[in-house]
Length: 135
Image 1 (tube, rainbow, N blue to C red):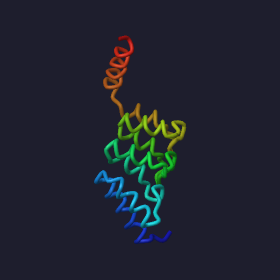
Image 2 (cartoon, rainbow, N blue to C red):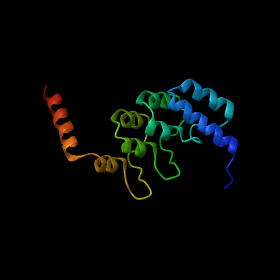
Image 3 (cartoon, one colour):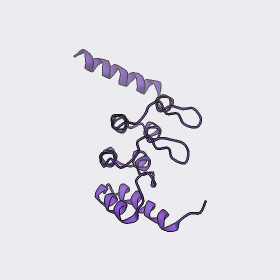
Image 4 (spheres, rainbow, N blue to C red):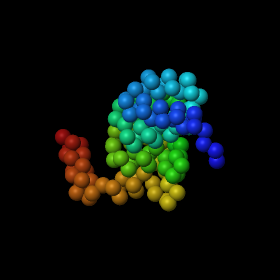
């Protein structure tokens, strides 16, 4: 497969704009370059590296597929699960990300979360949640 250097440069620019929390610049770059958010795996990138607010803004553009798989076979929800950022996970689910999708090695987002969460952290969150519900 041939790599288009101009396309790759435009994708890097989109990622840099995301790093700068500048979603307005991302929109301009999308219009100028002809590269889509999905072409750039921008939602995957944002879920992995950006502030949750930026992920929400990118999702709110309505231009990215929340169930798109990257080159490794991960959906955005899988990436968010690896990051362990609950606000991103909830936002993705609310925007239609499927929790049923599996990675190429059969892992669900829930299983990824469980694998990366220490039992004491999980139990502490569960206890806090139960205390909140009882009040």
